[in-house]
Image 1 (cartoon, protein in one colour):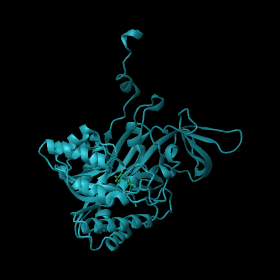
Image 2 (cartoon, protein in one colour; image 1 turned 180 degrees about the vertical axis):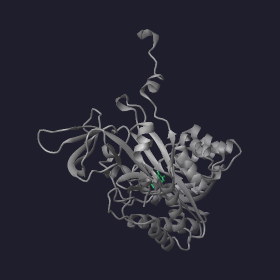
Image 3 (cartoon, rainbow, N blue to C red; image 1 turned 180 degrees about the horizontal axis):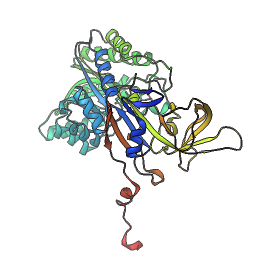
Image 4 (spheres, rainbow, N blue to C red; image 1 turned 90 degrees about the vertical axis):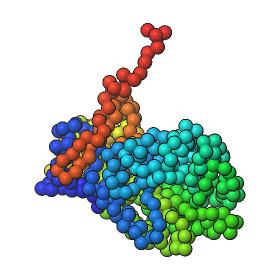
Length: 420
Ligand SMILES: *Cc1c(COP(=O)(O)O)cnc(C)c1O
Protein backbone atom coordinates (compact mmCIF):
# COMPACT_ATOMS: atom_id res chain seq x y z
CA UNK A 1 0.00 0.00 0.00
CA UNK A 2 1.23 3.50 -0.78
CA UNK A 3 -0.02 7.08 -0.73
CA UNK A 4 0.06 7.82 -4.47
CA UNK A 5 -3.62 7.83 -5.40
CA UNK A 6 -5.99 9.60 -7.77
CA UNK A 7 -8.32 12.14 -6.19
CA UNK A 8 -10.90 13.64 -8.56
CA UNK A 9 -8.88 12.26 -11.47
CA UNK A 10 -5.63 13.90 -10.39
CA UNK A 11 -2.68 11.86 -9.10
CA UNK A 12 -1.63 12.97 -5.62
CA UNK A 13 1.30 12.21 -3.36
CA UNK A 14 -0.52 12.08 -0.02
CA UNK A 15 -2.65 15.28 -0.20
CA UNK A 16 -0.57 17.09 -2.80
CA UNK A 17 -1.29 17.08 -6.56
CA UNK A 18 1.91 16.09 -8.36
CA UNK A 19 1.58 19.03 -10.75
CA UNK A 20 2.34 21.38 -7.82
CA UNK A 21 5.74 19.75 -7.45
CA UNK A 22 6.48 19.78 -11.17
CA UNK A 23 5.59 23.47 -11.39
CA UNK A 24 7.83 24.30 -8.43
CA UNK A 25 10.97 22.26 -9.11
CA UNK A 26 10.63 21.02 -12.68
CA UNK A 27 10.97 17.47 -13.94
CA UNK A 28 12.24 14.80 -13.75
CA UNK A 29 11.94 14.60 -9.97
CA UNK A 30 11.71 11.77 -7.47
CA UNK A 31 8.78 12.20 -5.09
CA UNK A 32 8.82 10.33 -1.78
CA UNK A 33 5.88 9.97 0.57
CA UNK A 34 6.77 10.30 4.22
CA UNK A 35 3.57 8.55 5.30
CA UNK A 36 4.38 5.57 3.07
CA UNK A 37 7.94 5.30 4.38
CA UNK A 38 6.67 5.37 7.94
CA UNK A 39 3.94 2.89 7.22
CA UNK A 40 6.33 0.39 5.66
CA UNK A 41 8.82 0.71 8.51
CA UNK A 42 6.00 0.09 11.00
CA UNK A 43 4.56 -2.86 9.08
CA UNK A 44 8.00 -4.47 9.04
CA UNK A 45 8.55 -3.86 12.75
CA UNK A 46 5.08 -5.23 13.50
CA UNK A 47 5.79 -8.36 11.44
CA UNK A 48 8.73 -9.17 13.72
CA UNK A 49 7.19 -8.04 16.99
CA UNK A 50 6.52 -11.63 18.10
CA UNK A 51 10.24 -12.51 17.97
CA UNK A 52 12.14 -12.20 21.26
CA UNK A 53 15.29 -10.26 20.28
CA UNK A 54 15.49 -8.40 16.98
CA UNK A 55 17.42 -5.59 15.36
CA UNK A 56 16.29 -3.97 12.10
CA UNK A 57 18.89 -2.13 10.02
CA UNK A 58 17.55 -0.31 6.96
CA UNK A 59 19.76 -1.19 3.96
CA UNK A 60 20.50 2.36 3.04
CA UNK A 61 21.90 1.60 -0.38
CA UNK A 62 18.24 1.25 -1.45
CA UNK A 63 17.67 4.93 -0.69
CA UNK A 64 20.42 6.87 1.08
CA UNK A 65 18.74 10.29 0.93
CA UNK A 66 19.28 12.01 4.28
CA UNK A 67 15.61 12.88 4.72
CA UNK A 68 14.63 9.26 4.05
CA UNK A 69 17.23 8.13 6.60
CA UNK A 70 15.83 10.63 9.07
CA UNK A 71 12.41 9.00 8.75
CA UNK A 72 14.02 5.60 9.38
CA UNK A 73 15.96 6.87 12.37
CA UNK A 74 12.79 8.39 13.85
CA UNK A 75 11.17 4.98 13.45
CA UNK A 76 14.01 3.48 15.45
CA UNK A 77 15.61 1.57 12.59
CA UNK A 78 19.36 1.10 12.42
CA UNK A 79 21.33 1.10 9.18
CA UNK A 80 23.05 -1.48 7.03
CA UNK A 81 25.84 0.34 5.17
CA UNK A 82 28.19 -0.83 2.45
CA UNK A 83 30.68 2.04 2.20
CA UNK A 84 32.29 4.79 4.20
CA UNK A 85 30.04 7.26 2.43
CA UNK A 86 26.94 5.39 3.56
CA UNK A 87 28.32 5.13 7.09
CA UNK A 88 28.74 8.92 7.21
CA UNK A 89 25.17 9.38 5.96
CA UNK A 90 23.75 7.04 8.60
CA UNK A 91 25.54 8.94 11.35
CA UNK A 92 24.50 12.29 9.87
CA UNK A 93 20.87 11.15 9.97
CA UNK A 94 21.20 10.52 13.69
CA UNK A 95 21.29 6.73 13.57
CA UNK A 96 23.26 5.60 16.65
CA UNK A 97 26.63 4.05 15.76
CA UNK A 98 25.70 0.98 17.76
CA UNK A 99 22.76 0.37 15.40
CA UNK A 100 24.95 0.35 12.29
CA UNK A 101 26.02 -2.83 10.50
CA UNK A 102 28.78 -2.54 7.90
CA UNK A 103 28.40 -5.05 5.04
CA UNK A 104 30.22 -5.30 1.73
CA UNK A 105 32.75 -7.48 0.01
CA UNK A 106 35.38 -4.81 -0.56
CA UNK A 107 35.71 -2.76 2.61
CA UNK A 108 38.84 -0.66 2.31
CA UNK A 109 41.25 -0.04 5.15
CA UNK A 110 40.15 3.57 5.56
CA UNK A 111 36.52 2.44 5.71
CA UNK A 112 37.26 -0.11 8.43
CA UNK A 113 39.07 2.63 10.37
CA UNK A 114 36.06 4.90 9.87
CA UNK A 115 33.81 2.19 11.33
CA UNK A 116 36.14 1.60 14.28
CA UNK A 117 36.39 5.35 14.90
CA UNK A 118 32.62 5.64 14.97
CA UNK A 119 32.24 2.57 17.15
CA UNK A 120 29.68 0.88 14.91
CA UNK A 121 27.66 -2.06 16.18
CA UNK A 122 28.86 -4.76 13.82
CA UNK A 123 31.03 -5.52 10.82
CA UNK A 124 29.77 -8.28 8.56
CA UNK A 125 32.95 -9.98 7.41
CA UNK A 126 32.86 -11.36 3.88
CA UNK A 127 36.15 -13.26 3.75
CA UNK A 128 38.86 -14.70 5.98
CA UNK A 129 41.31 -12.16 4.53
CA UNK A 130 39.05 -9.25 5.47
CA UNK A 131 38.57 -10.60 9.00
CA UNK A 132 42.32 -10.89 9.54
CA UNK A 133 42.88 -7.32 8.37
CA UNK A 134 40.06 -5.89 10.49
CA UNK A 135 41.18 -7.77 13.61
CA UNK A 136 44.73 -6.49 13.22
CA UNK A 137 43.54 -2.91 12.73
CA UNK A 138 41.29 -3.09 15.79
CA UNK A 139 43.93 -4.74 17.96
CA UNK A 140 46.53 -2.12 17.00
CA UNK A 141 44.10 0.55 18.20
CA UNK A 142 43.29 -1.28 21.40
CA UNK A 143 39.77 -1.99 20.19
CA UNK A 144 37.67 -5.10 19.73
CA UNK A 145 35.48 -5.20 16.61
CA UNK A 146 32.09 -6.88 16.96
CA UNK A 147 31.68 -9.03 13.85
CA UNK A 148 29.48 -11.56 12.11
CA UNK A 149 30.73 -13.90 9.40
CA UNK A 150 28.70 -13.67 6.21
CA UNK A 151 28.24 -17.06 4.65
CA UNK A 152 27.27 -17.95 1.12
CA UNK A 153 24.64 -20.67 1.51
CA UNK A 154 24.60 -21.64 -2.20
CA UNK A 155 20.88 -21.08 -2.54
CA UNK A 156 19.22 -19.93 -5.75
CA UNK A 157 17.19 -16.84 -4.84
CA UNK A 158 15.27 -17.15 -8.14
CA UNK A 159 15.62 -13.46 -8.87
CA UNK A 160 17.41 -11.45 -11.57
CA UNK A 161 20.97 -12.79 -11.97
CA UNK A 162 22.48 -9.35 -11.33
CA UNK A 163 20.87 -9.11 -7.87
CA UNK A 164 21.36 -12.72 -6.80
CA UNK A 165 24.03 -12.91 -4.09
CA UNK A 166 23.75 -16.33 -2.44
CA UNK A 167 24.91 -18.74 -5.15
CA UNK A 168 28.32 -20.36 -4.81
CA UNK A 169 29.60 -18.48 -7.87
CA UNK A 170 28.61 -15.07 -6.44
CA UNK A 171 31.33 -12.95 -4.80
CA UNK A 172 29.60 -12.60 -1.42
CA UNK A 173 30.36 -14.31 1.88
CA UNK A 174 32.43 -17.42 2.60
CA UNK A 175 31.31 -20.85 1.36
CA UNK A 176 29.06 -22.29 4.03
CA UNK A 177 30.90 -25.62 4.03
CA UNK A 178 34.16 -23.80 4.95
CA UNK A 179 32.53 -21.44 7.45
CA UNK A 180 33.27 -23.60 10.51
CA UNK A 181 37.04 -23.49 10.01
CA UNK A 182 37.10 -19.80 9.09
CA UNK A 183 34.92 -18.90 12.08
CA UNK A 184 37.28 -20.76 14.44
CA UNK A 185 40.39 -19.07 13.00
CA UNK A 186 38.88 -15.55 13.08
CA UNK A 187 37.27 -15.96 16.51
CA UNK A 188 40.70 -16.63 18.01
CA UNK A 189 42.21 -13.35 16.79
CA UNK A 190 42.93 -10.49 19.17
CA UNK A 191 40.84 -7.46 18.19
CA UNK A 192 37.92 -9.56 17.05
CA UNK A 193 34.68 -10.37 18.84
CA UNK A 194 33.17 -12.80 16.35
CA UNK A 195 29.65 -13.11 17.66
CA UNK A 196 27.48 -14.30 14.81
CA UNK A 197 26.72 -15.32 11.27
CA UNK A 198 25.01 -13.52 8.40
CA UNK A 199 23.33 -14.29 5.07
CA UNK A 200 21.83 -12.15 2.32
CA UNK A 201 20.90 -14.17 -0.75
CA UNK A 202 19.62 -11.50 -3.11
CA UNK A 203 17.08 -8.81 -3.77
CA UNK A 204 13.52 -8.61 -5.14
CA UNK A 205 12.74 -12.15 -3.97
CA UNK A 206 9.31 -13.27 -5.07
CA UNK A 207 8.78 -16.17 -2.73
CA UNK A 208 9.94 -17.15 0.71
CA UNK A 209 11.25 -20.62 -0.06
CA UNK A 210 14.84 -19.63 -1.02
CA UNK A 211 15.04 -17.52 2.15
CA UNK A 212 13.74 -20.41 4.22
CA UNK A 213 16.28 -22.75 2.62
CA UNK A 214 19.09 -20.32 3.44
CA UNK A 215 17.91 -19.83 7.03
CA UNK A 216 17.70 -23.59 7.60
CA UNK A 217 21.31 -23.90 6.44
CA UNK A 218 22.28 -21.02 8.72
CA UNK A 219 20.57 -22.71 11.67
CA UNK A 220 22.52 -25.91 10.98
CA UNK A 221 25.73 -23.87 10.87
CA UNK A 222 24.94 -22.22 14.21
CA UNK A 223 24.43 -25.66 15.77
CA UNK A 224 27.68 -26.90 14.23
CA UNK A 225 29.61 -23.86 15.48
CA UNK A 226 28.25 -24.23 18.99
CA UNK A 227 29.03 -27.94 19.02
CA UNK A 228 32.61 -26.97 18.18
CA UNK A 229 32.69 -24.66 21.19
CA UNK A 230 32.12 -21.35 19.40
CA UNK A 231 29.92 -18.56 20.72
CA UNK A 232 27.05 -17.39 18.51
CA UNK A 233 24.77 -14.68 19.87
CA UNK A 234 23.70 -12.97 16.64
CA UNK A 235 22.27 -14.09 13.30
CA UNK A 236 21.79 -11.54 10.52
CA UNK A 237 19.16 -12.70 8.03
CA UNK A 238 19.82 -9.90 5.49
CA UNK A 239 17.15 -8.32 3.32
CA UNK A 240 15.71 -9.28 -0.03
CA UNK A 241 11.92 -9.20 0.27
CA UNK A 242 10.48 -8.19 -3.10
CA UNK A 243 7.80 -5.65 -3.87
CA UNK A 244 5.15 -5.60 -6.60
CA UNK A 245 6.20 -3.48 -9.57
CA UNK A 246 3.05 -4.31 -11.55
CA UNK A 247 -0.40 -3.42 -10.29
CA UNK A 248 -2.08 -6.60 -9.08
CA UNK A 249 1.10 -8.60 -8.45
CA UNK A 250 1.12 -10.38 -5.11
CA UNK A 251 4.29 -10.79 -3.06
CA UNK A 252 4.90 -12.41 0.33
CA UNK A 253 3.95 -9.91 3.02
CA UNK A 254 6.28 -8.88 5.83
CA UNK A 255 3.85 -10.70 8.16
CA UNK A 256 4.27 -13.97 6.23
CA UNK A 257 8.03 -13.43 6.24
CA UNK A 258 7.99 -12.81 10.00
CA UNK A 259 5.94 -15.95 10.59
CA UNK A 260 8.38 -18.02 8.51
CA UNK A 261 11.35 -16.58 10.43
CA UNK A 262 9.62 -17.38 13.73
CA UNK A 263 9.07 -20.97 12.65
CA UNK A 264 12.52 -21.62 11.15
CA UNK A 265 14.57 -19.75 13.75
CA UNK A 266 12.70 -20.94 16.85
CA UNK A 267 15.19 -22.12 19.44
CA UNK A 268 18.22 -20.41 17.89
CA UNK A 269 18.58 -18.26 21.01
CA UNK A 270 20.23 -15.35 19.19
CA UNK A 271 19.47 -11.72 18.42
CA UNK A 272 17.97 -11.86 14.93
CA UNK A 273 19.10 -9.02 12.68
CA UNK A 274 17.34 -7.84 9.53
CA UNK A 275 18.47 -5.63 6.66
CA UNK A 276 15.38 -4.68 4.65
CA UNK A 277 15.84 -2.12 1.88
CA UNK A 278 13.47 -2.26 -1.07
CA UNK A 279 10.46 -3.48 0.92
CA UNK A 280 10.63 -0.34 3.08
CA UNK A 281 11.14 2.33 0.43
CA UNK A 282 10.28 0.86 -2.99
CA UNK A 283 6.63 1.83 -3.11
CA UNK A 284 7.27 5.04 -1.20
CA UNK A 285 8.55 6.88 -4.26
CA UNK A 286 7.65 7.72 -7.84
CA UNK A 287 9.68 9.35 -10.59
CA UNK A 288 7.66 12.26 -11.95
CA UNK A 289 8.38 13.10 -15.56
CA UNK A 290 6.99 15.25 -18.37
CA UNK A 291 6.35 14.13 -21.92
CA UNK A 292 8.67 16.00 -24.30
CA UNK A 293 6.90 14.84 -27.42
CA UNK A 294 5.17 11.91 -28.99
CA UNK A 295 6.96 10.64 -32.07
CA UNK A 296 5.02 8.62 -34.58
CA UNK A 297 6.83 5.57 -35.81
CA UNK A 298 6.64 4.27 -39.36
CA UNK A 299 5.28 0.97 -38.15
CA UNK A 300 3.89 0.07 -34.78
CA UNK A 301 3.53 1.96 -31.55
CA UNK A 302 4.52 5.64 -31.20
CA UNK A 303 7.44 6.67 -29.01
CA UNK A 304 6.43 8.66 -25.95
CA UNK A 305 9.65 10.57 -25.24
CA UNK A 306 9.79 11.66 -21.60
CA UNK A 307 12.28 13.94 -19.85
CA UNK A 308 13.41 11.19 -17.45
CA UNK A 309 16.05 8.83 -18.75
CA UNK A 310 18.18 5.82 -17.88
CA UNK A 311 20.60 8.12 -16.04
CA UNK A 312 17.78 9.05 -13.62
CA UNK A 313 16.23 5.58 -13.28
CA UNK A 314 18.64 2.83 -14.30
CA UNK A 315 16.65 -0.27 -13.36
CA UNK A 316 14.92 -0.83 -16.70
CA UNK A 317 18.20 -0.49 -18.62
CA UNK A 318 20.18 -2.48 -16.05
CA UNK A 319 17.82 -5.29 -15.15
CA UNK A 320 15.10 -5.08 -17.78
CA UNK A 321 12.92 -3.99 -14.86
CA UNK A 322 9.27 -3.03 -15.17
CA UNK A 323 7.88 0.19 -13.67
CA UNK A 324 4.17 0.94 -14.00
CA UNK A 325 3.70 4.18 -15.94
CA UNK A 326 0.62 6.32 -15.30
CA UNK A 327 -0.52 9.77 -16.37
CA UNK A 328 -0.80 12.37 -13.61
CA UNK A 329 -4.19 13.41 -15.05
CA UNK A 330 -5.52 10.60 -17.26
CA UNK A 331 -7.99 11.76 -19.91
CA UNK A 332 -9.76 8.42 -20.00
CA UNK A 333 -8.31 7.06 -23.24
CA UNK A 334 -5.49 4.58 -23.66
CA UNK A 335 -2.72 4.04 -26.20
CA UNK A 336 -0.09 1.43 -26.93
CA UNK A 337 3.29 3.13 -26.83
CA UNK A 338 7.02 2.75 -26.37
CA UNK A 339 8.15 4.85 -23.40
CA UNK A 340 11.67 6.16 -23.91
CA UNK A 341 14.05 8.80 -22.55
CA UNK A 342 16.15 11.30 -24.51
CA UNK A 343 19.53 9.55 -24.03
CA UNK A 344 21.43 8.39 -27.08
CA UNK A 345 21.25 4.69 -26.28
CA UNK A 346 18.60 2.23 -27.34
CA UNK A 347 18.85 0.92 -23.77
CA UNK A 348 17.23 4.17 -22.66
CA UNK A 349 13.85 2.49 -22.97
CA UNK A 350 11.38 2.17 -20.09
CA UNK A 351 8.74 0.11 -21.88
CA UNK A 352 7.97 -1.28 -25.34
CA UNK A 353 4.49 -1.81 -26.69
CA UNK A 354 2.96 -0.89 -23.32
CA UNK A 355 -0.77 -0.19 -22.89
CA UNK A 356 -0.70 3.20 -21.13
CA UNK A 357 -2.82 6.30 -20.54
CA UNK A 358 -3.05 8.39 -23.72
CA UNK A 359 -0.42 11.12 -23.46
CA UNK A 360 0.71 14.11 -25.43
CA UNK A 361 3.53 16.63 -25.26
CA UNK A 362 3.57 18.51 -21.96
CA UNK A 363 1.63 15.91 -19.97
CA UNK A 364 2.95 14.71 -16.62
CA UNK A 365 3.33 11.02 -15.80
CA UNK A 366 4.99 8.84 -13.19
CA UNK A 367 7.08 5.73 -13.06
CA UNK A 368 5.83 4.02 -9.94
CA UNK A 369 7.71 2.06 -7.31
CA UNK A 370 10.84 4.14 -7.86
CA UNK A 371 11.70 4.76 -4.21
CA UNK A 372 14.32 2.00 -4.03
CA UNK A 373 17.42 1.78 -6.22
CA UNK A 374 16.20 4.87 -8.09
CA UNK A 375 17.85 8.23 -7.44
CA UNK A 376 20.77 6.51 -5.74
CA UNK A 377 21.80 4.86 -9.02
CA UNK A 378 21.52 8.10 -10.99
CA UNK A 379 24.39 9.33 -13.12
CA UNK A 380 25.03 12.44 -15.19
CA UNK A 381 25.37 10.55 -18.47
CA UNK A 382 24.78 12.72 -21.54
CA UNK A 383 25.61 15.69 -19.25
CA UNK A 384 22.06 15.71 -17.95
CA UNK A 385 22.88 16.58 -14.36
CA UNK A 386 21.63 14.74 -11.27
CA UNK A 387 17.91 14.36 -10.68
CA UNK A 388 16.09 16.31 -7.93
CA UNK A 389 14.32 14.59 -4.99
CA UNK A 390 11.43 15.87 -2.90
CA UNK A 391 9.53 14.48 0.09
CA UNK A 392 5.83 15.04 0.63
CA UNK A 393 4.21 15.24 4.05
CA UNK A 394 0.45 15.69 3.86
CA UNK A 395 -0.18 18.70 1.62
CA UNK A 396 3.33 20.12 1.83
CA UNK A 397 6.63 19.11 0.31
CA UNK A 398 10.31 19.90 0.64
CA UNK A 399 13.23 19.49 -1.74
CA UNK A 400 15.41 16.82 -0.11
CA UNK A 401 18.09 16.75 -2.85
CA UNK A 402 18.80 19.67 -5.14
CA UNK A 403 18.93 19.08 -8.85
CA UNK A 404 22.65 19.21 -9.68
CA UNK A 405 22.96 21.07 -12.94
CA UNK A 406 25.42 20.11 -15.70
CA UNK A 407 27.31 23.37 -15.06
CA UNK A 408 27.99 22.31 -11.46
CA UNK A 409 29.39 19.00 -12.66
CA UNK A 410 31.63 20.51 -15.32
CA UNK A 411 32.81 23.08 -12.77
CA UNK A 412 34.63 20.21 -11.03
CA UNK A 413 36.53 19.34 -14.24
CA UNK A 414 39.91 20.79 -15.17
CA UNK A 415 41.78 21.26 -18.44
CA UNK A 416 45.53 20.88 -17.75
CA UNK A 417 47.64 23.85 -18.78
CA UNK A 418 49.53 21.66 -21.28
CA UNK A 419 46.32 21.44 -23.27
CA UNK A 420 45.68 25.17 -23.26
C1 LIG B 1 21.32 -4.82 -0.83
C2 LIG B 1 21.45 -5.47 0.51
C3 LIG B 1 20.36 -5.54 1.37
C4 LIG B 1 18.99 -5.01 1.03
O1 LIG B 1 18.38 -5.73 0.01
P1 LIG B 1 16.84 -5.44 -0.34
O2 LIG B 1 16.54 -6.40 -1.42
O3 LIG B 1 16.75 -4.03 -0.79
O4 LIG B 1 16.05 -5.69 0.89
C5 LIG B 1 20.55 -6.10 2.62
N1 LIG B 1 21.76 -6.61 2.99
C6 LIG B 1 22.83 -6.55 2.18
C7 LIG B 1 24.10 -7.11 2.65
C8 LIG B 1 22.71 -5.99 0.92
O5 LIG B 1 23.77 -5.97 0.11
